[in-house]
Image (cartoon, rainbow, N blue to C red):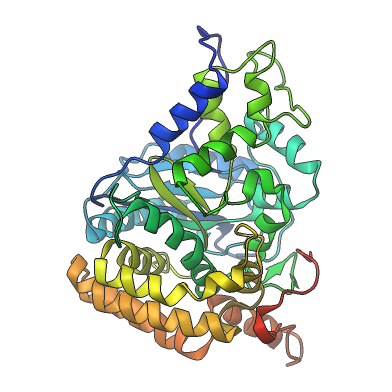
Length: 445
């Protein structure tokens, strides 16, 4: 969602063939080598300081964002279709470099927003307000028309969701705990544990949805050609190249006119047409694919809900970095989640039973709770080897004690608070089902 893509302008076109697309995707989406860099993208809902449930008028957002763009930030600052704010870190050579640079940028951003009587909220899904477009640009006009064909989930994803996206190097070419094949597989199995542990979106429009992560349920309900992972068996490069070619084309860009939104046109079919795409069209097409793990040279893990508190985003960043970049912790995580692959079955994430249960139940699911406990312990032991400070270790330990050890996630706090506002009546709280069997519809709003 946060990809920086300019509107279409007239350009010299160099068309690409189907074979060229496959070769390009293989070459640019998995850049292998020793894991050296780390990044994070933190998205926030913007609210009125006098009342976090109040939507912010577009003219107030526009003025605030104009002021923010004058700041000398290290992170890239972008705005999402519904007015959500995102900071994307520069590639960092260490965990603490990443934490330090983004924390400093967030301090500066919050100071400017406070002057405008605005603040930031970390929810995976806006608990109170319906989707409302802030940005009216050709990309998002086309995206909305395309996603609306399948239902309301796409518009909610565009305008009311926020996340913590952790970016990791693809890993070594060779096999082993830090090999790119292992890391690709681990991201899709451990991803369900991360969904459950950090679920923080149990409400929409002031009502309980029946999910701990409503945001994740939105992704699971959308077009699988755009949001589902490719099959995990075999070579990740080949699998992703096939997915890019077979995925539906969201739009065909045009200068000075509304963009065309084709129906039932795959990128593969486009390359075989009388007016085939060029390299820029391919690059743009890949920004319209939203699987839970997106290869962009590095691996972009997209499954974690935005977190509560000013520094809540640091815990998923630290835990994920430790479980992928420390060889000992990566091996523990691999052994821990390997049994969960059978429960996931052959269906791709996020539409398989494991991912659905993670989104619905969070750590109330016994298997996911047990896996999270082992993985968080391994991450905590590894973090000093990655140079983590005492403050980061304390944050991870505090999250583990408050949530993981008790089979809870941040969504449970929001459910408890909502229940306390209804005459003490308990809120709707889904409980884990035996053997992780999913039930019910994909999304309730």
